[in-house]
Length: 122
Image 1: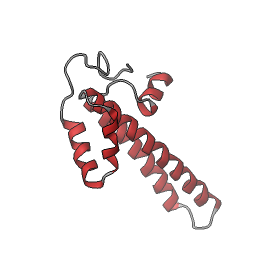
Image 2: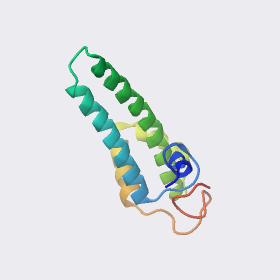
Image 3: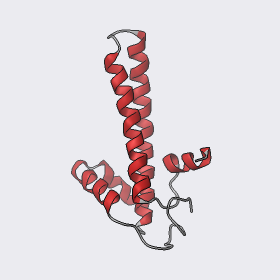
Image 4: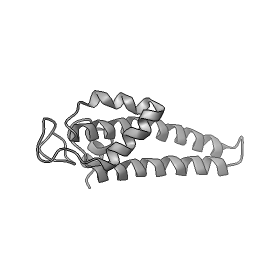
């Protein structure tokens, strides 16, 4: 996968995304967050390493929020729905249900208004 494809996957809002790509990309983001949090908890308090890992965790967290919204928008596009519904991902109970729908419910077969095929920008 090229750098342009990764940039589109995690930061772009155009195109469509399949169930598996959505799940795997979200899992990768969770692993990065968990690793940074794990390293932060291992570092001695008030040490330079602790501060570095804390900053790194928050940077990864904010990038992950952006990326999760971008993934959700593209997944919504695969259903033929506008990306504005991605704001529902910020409502606690709804976000869990949306995640399950995004992972298990198939998108539109064939082209739709948001792209000719899945896993590609428009």
